[in-house]
Image 1 (spheres, rainbow, N blue to C red):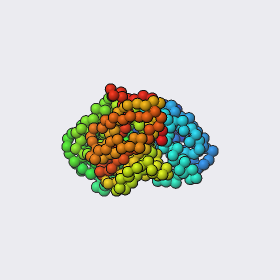
Image 2: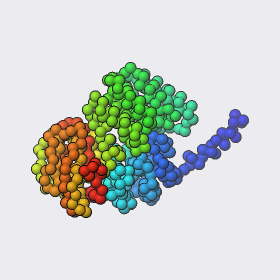
Image 3: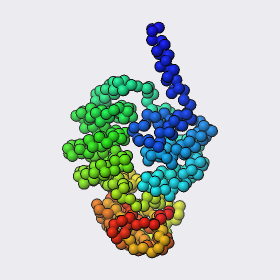
Image 4: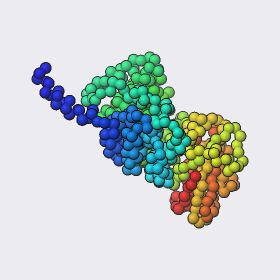
Length: 440
């Protein structure tokens, strides 16, 4: 034992600075990673910081300092980094967040995604300015109770990690209780992403003949995995036409959504394949929703105000009082409606979107409107287009913009399916119209 004592002391000495970091030191070190951050790759460095922030005393100077540090990192962060910063700021955001992010509301960075993140946070702060921070919601509950991270987490070598995952894989495959099995799988998600070849672990889990287990594994892959090879594999598995084909396709769409900026061409090819060939209509529309947000759809209107009505369409949405409208941010409003799902947008209900197009001069253009559900389109107080069925391909609508402000309203009628949509203004030759501004 004496032989190993100096060596063990040396190891503990090396490890001490890591484990002795203060919460703010963890925040500072994590902020250095955000300019190159990629979800699923750098999670191991970000996760301890995120947990440390939510363990800070609510409203303390320490938490305020963490908020400032995250806001300083926001402008230079990758899109994945901005989303992660937004997730961390969401429950602790205060006046400093509003002040720092307001300039980003009109930003075109990341094709409008940065503006969506900023708007979401600002809207949240303004709505809940009297709430204590962190907000006492189900969002922060796992952090406050220490359940978000494994309580048995320790630093591991690749060999130790592989051995643990082998044991956990065996436990999952042997488990007959779906809820217990899901709990076991959730613990594996982040760990699998830390391995050199995540796909191999997913293949081991998918080797089970149990269809319910396979569906749970595909869901896990879609939510945790960020590897292109997993996206390719899932897209190919969709073509096998098994009971889990739609689950595989959905996993591919989720991974593609994360990789759409860094792997544009390949992601577009995979999503197009799914949108054209997947047997599940909802998954096809999800793939289309991501395609509509990609570079091929540049010039799209990213910011909207929205309101919802049940059963009866309205002939004049311009008459809705101001308090009825809420920002539509990243596909979701305070109403709970999401672009790519049917959640809180039941069949027969109507959703209205509002924006104002500002043009320095009068312009004859084409409005390219994509909607798979019945839709009406108002411009300057008049219905200029209506489709009672919607369409798989975008509609091209001739429009005349006045010099100055041009109010736009769109009505969607839910058919009980996913409802991706997009709107952009094009020149006659198909080029995106320049010089337009969109103001809520």
